[in-house]
Image (tube, rainbow, N blue to C red; front, side, top):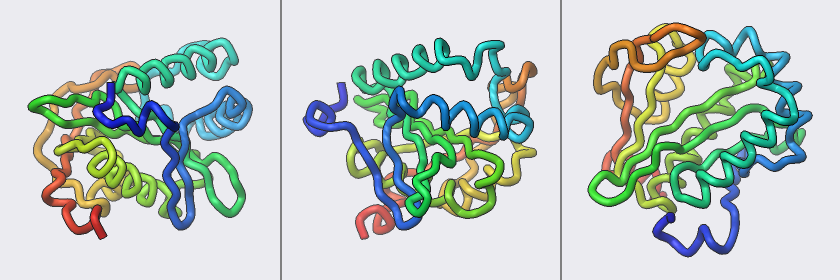
Length: 197
């Protein structure tokens, strides 16, 4: 379990100037599936290979169940990103592989719909999640991995204050083939005043 009683009382929601983040709900399926489908060619080069039933309601129910189980067990917190002005879903971001004890670390991963890319939404989402990870989850270190050719993702991480620590060879199987990834990390002490005002 997460070490704070916060998680037994309410589900987290994060509010930014242009976006808000909340846990996915069953009723989000139609909007999620539509955004993912229209963005498929944009997303596929950077994601694990999509299953044949990727966007189907049955797979969605399993996905929601896994999100909730991971949250309840303190393993991950998955957020959907919504634009404040329109209320539309623009993407998703997750703090996963959460470890406490001597590690106190987690990893972030994210995706954004093609029509919302390049507008600063993901940078704001990453900053909100950083603050949540350090202030609420009390993590010490956040990691992120991205394919070296993914210039947009590299830019987001570097603008958010992450430092590149190295190259992970043949790290994740992305779109059917093993890909090298840059390892980025942010330490709570380096975030410091940014998280605390």
